Each structure stands twice: as C-alpha cells, then as structure tokens.
Image (cartoon, rainbow, N blue to C red; front, side, top):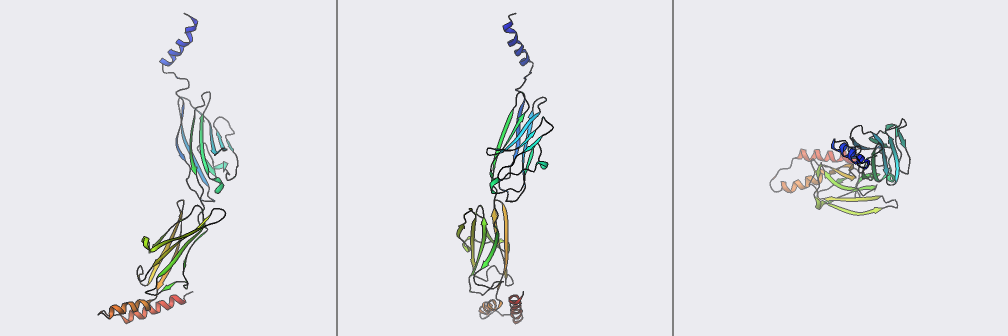
Length: 283
C-alpha cells in the first residue's frame, strides 16, 4: 500500500471507532455569580462554576479579570495554586478564595467594573470558556432623616393645619429612591412631592421627598407613625417619626358633630388633653 495513504486511513479508523483526541474535551461555565450592586465596605464573593467535559479532562487555570486587570489566578496543575494581585479597588482575600470563588475585601467605588471569569482546560487542547458580568458598588445615604416645618419635637399639629414633612437622604450614589408610609401603609401619590436634588463634587446626591396632608386623616388615637424608605441598589435605609394631633383641636372638630346631635364625651376630652401635655413635656 502506498505510504501516503497510511496516515489518512489510520485517522479514519480512529474516527470510525469514536476516538476524538481533542474535540471531545470542552469547558462549560454553568453559573457566574457577580453581585450587581454591593455597598461600599462589603466583602464580596465572586463565583464561577464550571464543568470540564471529556475523558480525563483536568483544569489548567481559572483567571479573574476586572476590565484589563487580572487580579486572581487558580492553577490546577501546580502545588502553588493561588496567586492574587492588587489594583485600585481590588484587594483579594486569598486565604478565602478557591478554584470556583474569589473574595474581594472592603469594596469601594473604584471596585466597580466588568468582571470576567476565564476557565481553561489542560493542554494540549487548552479548551477555554469565558463569562462576564458588571458590578457597580453603591453608596447608601450617609443619613436619612425626617424633618418637620417649624414644629417642636415631637411635632404636634392642629385640625385644619396642613402637615408638611421632608425626608432627606444625604450623599447617596446613585440617587436614593424615596417613598413614604404612614402606619406601614404606602402614601398616595398626590400627598408627595419630589424636591430638587443636590449633587456634590464626588457625584453623591442628596434627595428630598415632601409629604403633605390634612389631619385628622391617617391619625389613630391622635398619633401617626410616618416612615421614609430610602433605597439605593437594593439596600434600604428607614427613618421613622411619630407625630401627634392636638386633642383639643380634635375635640373642637368633634364639637361640630356634637352640635348636630352627637354627644362628646367629657372624659374623653380630658384624657386627650392630659395626653397632649404629657407628650409636649416628655423628655
């Protein structure tokens, strides 16, 4: 037989028997976990789960990148398996990291970026799979507070007086989404007004949402608990405040009904007046 035909025939025989030296080996990334919006100061775990498909297919390396910066390598073929590299915003907890997970310590705004996991099987084929996701580190508000207009603390209102409260979330990035609740019930839209934002030189935003309504609506036993929820990247900060209705003004309102045939309880009025003065003078 012509020697020039020997090698091609041998290759065909191998293929016919189902023997594929390299093509039967593949790498699959089955899950990439990169937190979308952790908050400043968190320790963050990035996870890259993978399968090495094929007979006796072993791991060569797992590499992690933030943009063009390679910050972690796990080698499957050496005793010195883990290598970590520091960059601005990237500090690896090497002792807590493995072949599938890498832990970033004390993340900051500078940590944000496109994160890539690259998994490579051993040679000579060096089959490779890549997956990536974006992470943006957020800054919750430095504080969230509820302020009343020219009122004592705690605020006390009269029937016929419009209540105005401002909820302010200071220095968040990105902007905090603010919502109001009274006694755990979301407040209707026509009672709220978004005021102009303030952005500082670092891009941190202070935002304010006004709440306004006329008592005695929302009050129960002359008390209403208001809560402001500030949400940034899935992280919620809540401020609460109890506000009070002057029972004397409430009694005056009831007197209008009493004059139409309803009787006002004298005991009820006295108890509410005592409650009002206790609230005003409590420490």
